[in-house]
Image 1: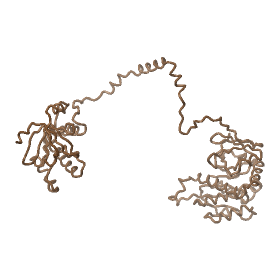
Image 2: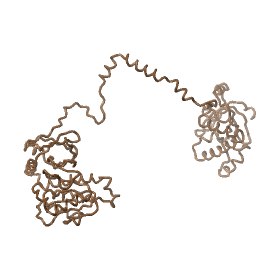
Image 3: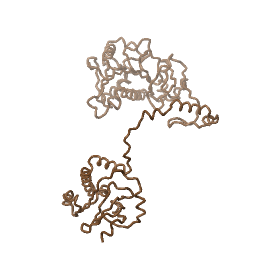
Length: 474
């Protein structure tokens, strides 16, 4: 009865995991309950081996097919050299020894063909697939050597349609010589010269595209001179966006601060605003988030503030208090043998509640360079302080420390500043400073717009979204 099946074309359904196979029956073994197919197809694709063997336990459904349908499938292009026949039946003689170890570890002694088990997703199927791959490599060595093995790998990766005749290398130089660059460009140029005129008209009428950060609404032209003053200080600056900021003389600046105090912007409020803005600028100069992090507590920056017994000194002490609150090592120099203003005394009282240090002698200042020096020695009202010994000693220490200097609200004078500052911070509106090498910054101290207008100043805030902005010589 088994010989009656030989030569029949059948379709074997092995379930979802193994798929469907078609081919011609080559042998049937009742003893081992196996059936072998010659020239098999797996899910419509030619198998890389000429024969596969199935166990009855793996077969879900078996159908007889029309011989004409299979002949049409066999007319596809096949590889020139086929690997040797590998029979992977569980009871086959060629692989009985190979599967002895697997049979001892499993409750069911059976082995499925290599082409079936290589595609199985389960863990047990993967183990069997690895064993079948070893069988195929041994069979290749016995039946053809390395050349057959290489072709088998190509068939597994790229299918059975691999062209074995591509032995010659591609001639890149010869192919490039066929390209006439001059002729192509002349043709392009000729086509562009004979282009109809209506194309350019369409390009002109094409709507303009905008970037995500561009304003699509047509507005009025930008007025860059938005601040005008009744008394000009003699210098003009401009912001990064091009807005013009004129300087004002000290007399007008003093009247502006007095008007702000009348409307409620007291000296204490102004000192707090200046302390916050100047400390924020100092933190940025010290490195910002790259320097002040919880992981960098062993390298805390050191800042020395040189303060006098006046309002400018009080502004410096307010800045030092905010820096100390941000875990900066702060040292405030303030002479204790001169009369101090009440604002200075109040700021010293608040500063004493921080971790900052206060000294009254130059000998107590660091000898090694510090990270930043903030100069608040000069006074707008009393320029004679420069002649005192404590002032000259502090200025000499700052110039010899080789640290960068930030000057807060320096006075206007014919002479250069005693302490050479790299950055200068002006308040509200800039003064006509004499220094040329210092970079000027402007601080918003919270003066309302109507206060400017009261003094005849046409004012539109140049700060935008910031409280401290750089100014450049216009």
